[in-house]
Image 1: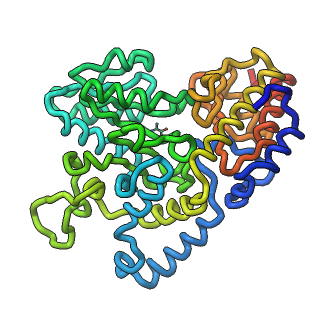
Image 2: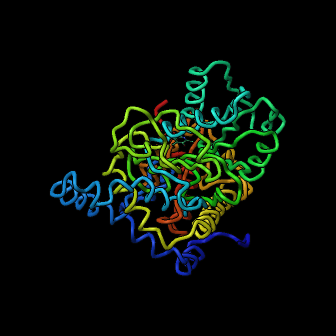
Length: 405
Ligand SMILES: *Cc1c(COP(=O)(O)O)cnc(C)c1O
């Protein structure tokens, strides 16, 4: 992308040429709004309400318990998992949809610690998402001698040694959008003999992850952010094929049993990733998530990523052009180190986010001083990124964000 000035005309031309231009029509877009919060709750795909109604009325309402076989409910966690697998670069049979993100992380942490006996450290960052830190502390508290060490992202490699059982990181930072070097850090973890567990909540559906090629051991992430599965959508977990027969689910349940309908008192784990299933899967949530994944099945992660980089680049460049120095860019300026969001630091961040929302630009605020703007490439146009920058420029130039003093 060249650096000459950004104009609405230039953005309109990019929209006309955009290979993802038509995909926007598959989503419900609120008229007059530019939604830059798809990293918190992704937009509703148009196909989802009808699919939910069908599952409720026909599969649940009429077929009832027979749907466990007929409607393919039983296989849904793996079937939907494979659809996410193709987005995060996993092989078939490596991804399971179940539980919530935090629960999935707790399971995988327990599994990782069990697979590295004699090592007592969970290494993570102090910047990690709070739920990840709480989960790590909770798991460590249940086990004898396990400690959690939080370090600065810069200190990760230097902190890897023979005591580390699992390197536990979030790929794209929820606050700043900084993207860690997943391939490099995974191989550093392996050099130290540790497993790498990645939280992909802000990655799946937004950036190229490449679980298989990058050697990722374990991963989990949200269904409701860039995967558009709806509020509280079930999460996904990834277990590398080579590990599946040696890691144990620390929260075993009957549906992860090799033969659940034998109802035997002793647990025998199912083969493959299914052993990480604990409970009866949430079929309505799975149905919404599956319809959302189907509506993007013809779109590659590379395409999404390419457009997302252009959207964040143009937004940042337009601000730099028009409002130099007004904000501290909290996100990396280098797009290779940035996820699909732009975070701006400003002492009045909260008032700015609110005033932007009044102008139809929906972002969110993260304490203490971050305006967080997510760019979901499936349903945002180049003109939207441009118009959002224009709204922000006008707001700052007119001081229209000053709240009551
Ligand atoms: C959004 C997010 C979560 C969400 O956890 P839930 O259990 O789904 O509420 C977890 N980790 C990260 C990094 C997130 O951004």
